[in-house]
Length: 179
Image (tube, rainbow, N blue to C red):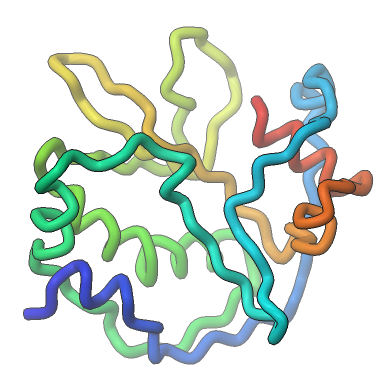
């Protein structure tokens, strides 16, 4: 059985059909947030146009032996299949199968990260909105957020984020991410 580290470094062989539909956002509750003025982007686009992302600066550093423990955990590759990203639900299914499930195998213990879908954000204040994905860790009887995900289809304009100059659609997304 391959390790989590081996699968994370592998590119999926599954065929992906992306018709490039865009799902925009304009949630009324997000309008209360100020526009982002200073961006901290964790990706770069190289001269060939390939995006490279590093999430390390966005999270706390791993403990000394943690990386070795996590990447050596056994993991199952996704089943062979064909994907078509017709709807946001299709994007969510692809994300969980091809990315999240593999990464979470590294976080099954030491402590475990628990993922949920379409639930309230993990916060002290009770709000009416749901988020598409939450990743959290239990400490005692309390669950603390590690990451929250909101699925959109082809909405992110990497050129605008890289330049730090967000247009209207990207500002709406940024306000939603802020909330």
